[in-house]
Image (tube, rainbow, N blue to C red; front, side, top):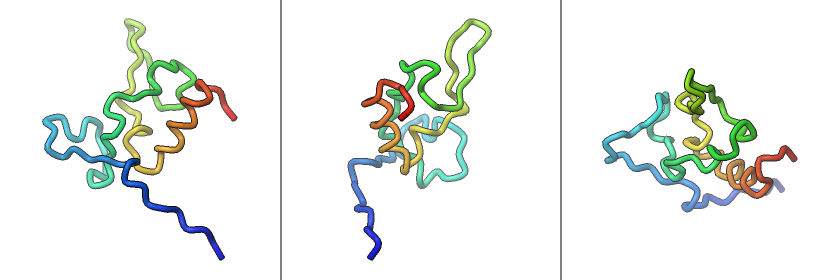
Length: 88
């Protein structure tokens, strides 16, 4: 018998009334997760695992990254924080 993943309400929040919603381009606005509005992985720098680049001024630009905004990535983010950005 296959184990069924429990739906955890604390893993997803969508603030559709926010004036910036969605803050990144997406083809799935109904599944856009606002829980990590400010990405907790940002401070991990290059170890965050996201799709980022650096501006000419050397500022990390995460505008092309949707990792914190996908419902299924809650565990990934928590895991990265627990590891301090290190790969398992």
